[in-house]
Image (cartoon, rainbow, N blue to C red; front, side, top):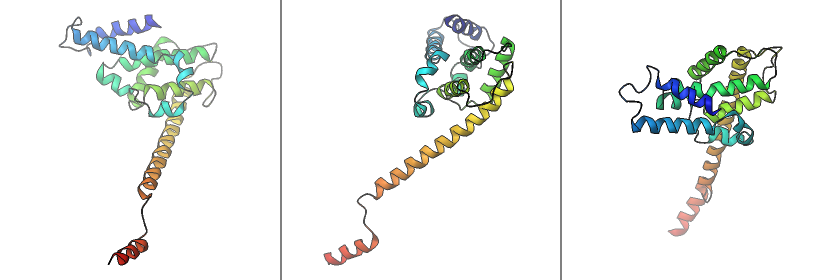
Amino acid sequence: MTENIQQVISEIKHTKWELASKKESSPEWSKKKQGLIEILQDNTPSKQYLLCTDIDLCFRCQSPTLGDLKRDYNRLAPIAFLNPQITDLSVYCNCKNILTEQVIESLSMLISNEYPYLKLTELMLFFYRFKLGYYESFYGSVSPMAITKSLNVFVKERNEYLRTVESKEYLDKQKAERKGAISYAEYLRRKNNQV
């Protein structure tokens, strides 16, 4: 896993998207590179089993999004996160034909471009759930289309979950604000008693 991370960092340094005006030996780049390495190491497929036991944490924590990675590092940073996740899923499904590196890379780019708002923890939950059989199945070989169709279903589930949580929080806030409040009739009664 560390070799993959180092390889991606090396690729990042050699792209035209790299911090063009910065030298790769600059302290700023070194700090950014270290930050990316830490993010990638904190979000490996092996961490899915610990993280994904708390769905609320996955959806509501302060995890970076794919868009954050792209903005803060470059266009390859989200791919560095997604490639190991997709590879792990492909291997886990134990199909006779696993995805090629080129297909994994293409799928990673598509997901990165279409879902920049998804947090890394949300994507880890998606891959975790996919392994549990929540979504599309593979029949003989791993299908990128099954993954993207399943991701569409997951995004709908995510949005509904977040809407439900936000609605509950809003109602709880309204209830707390009304606590201790009096009705208009009670207000008038009290007002008249003061006069």
